[in-house]
Length: 289
Image (cartoon, rainbow, N blue to C red; front, side):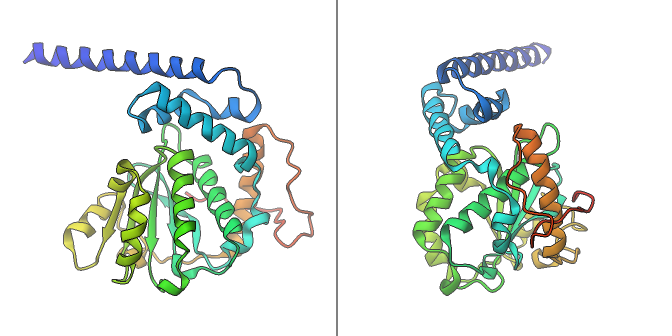
């Protein structure tokens, strides 16, 4: 018994050393980088790209190169809340005021509350919330959880297939291993037709993280509750917490986080609105738990 345990421990150490070697190989492979790219490429970041490509250094390097190009043009770290706040007025996407049982940041999505027509701004809003969720991850935690409430969703207010594909591409290609789990709660039957197309855009790893939950399916409900404390889980998802989205308060929180974002990336924040601007809140509440 002790011999087997010793072997197991030795195997783990060897695997860690191999992974460390591949992280170094990947870092050498991406060449000299500066500014936000340098800040982005932490060891933890490189491990996520390697994990997403099954520790194949060449594939991980290609994936990372494409992300760095995307970030250099899209500049997700420079998006500010006042630029996308209109997208959040109905509470269709926001960071929850609770974590899951593993301490992960939780994003709540309510696609039935779609309120705008600009696909570009919708994507910028999503990217901003993902960046914000990452900013608010606790020390040592790399991933977030999604809760998707389908109340009010219909084909008429669903996003176009092309938009769904573009969204998935951003998530999979530029935020690898950031999603821990996504629970789709009680989607209507008509969603199945939409899903049959969308699921083909998902890579196998991401597909395994998407879970459908139906109130009458005990196993699916139990799986979701294994991730969330019932006292935190909103009633819309079968829990006990009352979910009330306050756009004004959330905007204050996000404006405060924009300052943290600029500081994190070492940016002179020229994106803040004027003090009398519509979304230029100067006072923020305590950060959400």
